[in-house]
Image (cartoon, rainbow, N blue to C red; front, side, top):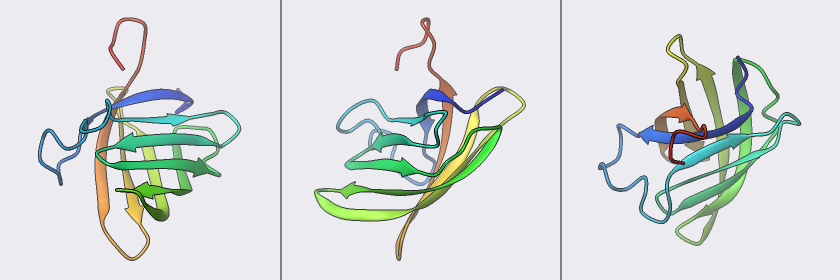
Amino acid sequence: MSLTGRWRIVAMPDYVEDYRDMMEPAYIEFAADGSGEFAFGCVTGQIIGAGDGNDVAFSWQGNDEMDEAQGNGWAEIQPDGSINGQICFHGGDEADFVARKCTSSTAC
């Protein structure tokens, strides 16, 4: 299985339940060329250098409540088909997440 595609972030244990979908449904998306993007709460980011496979590490640049932000992260496919990962802010917080693959039968 590959991480390529759009994944709906369904859990972020370090945040209150309704934060992740504050601005839009939370997601992370990986392209086969190593790029991608994510959004949760008031954070958006463009993924750089993720690669393709069952697990990836990446850098990102974006915004956190309209302030420039950047960091790194990782994601790994789990045996149940979900992914676990972490989005880290340089000099700041770490945001753990669980996501499920978006399909025609699941809302994203």
